[in-house]
Image (cartoon, rainbow, N blue to C red; front, side, top):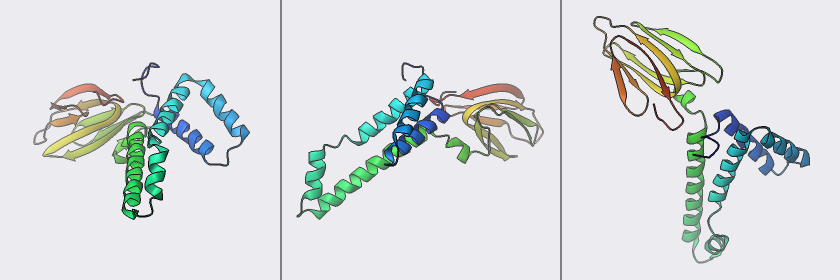
Length: 196
């Protein structure tokens, strides 16, 4: 965890990535660089996201250039060249995947219900189940009579469930354990680190 108090918001990370892509594109000019510096100065979270992005880039370049050139230039060893290219591709994909998993709001893609930043949503579902999603939240639903469940993927939700004859108890999973309830009203939050 950074000294600034945790991970920057997803929207800020997306902006940092957009700035990084623009500046690395080869077509960015002095105005773009000045605009990026202005954006960085607006908020400490901007600088924090930018610094994390820079660290990821430095980690990707840790293969010593002499080793990379020697492996790629060795004429008698096309196999070594292919292996090194494969290793570089896999490490790049792994870092990109980790960064995307950690910072992107991927949970909305896997969700049945979600809200954007600043949006709240109340939903009445079947069998006496009501949920209210707070801002920037996502849930996946499993609502069969014999097994009702909600997976809280991100954010916060208020749940109100009522016992009904022939309807299974509600199971709620927030990543580090499950809660089961017949009749209950509770609030549950999942933080960036996955803690409930």
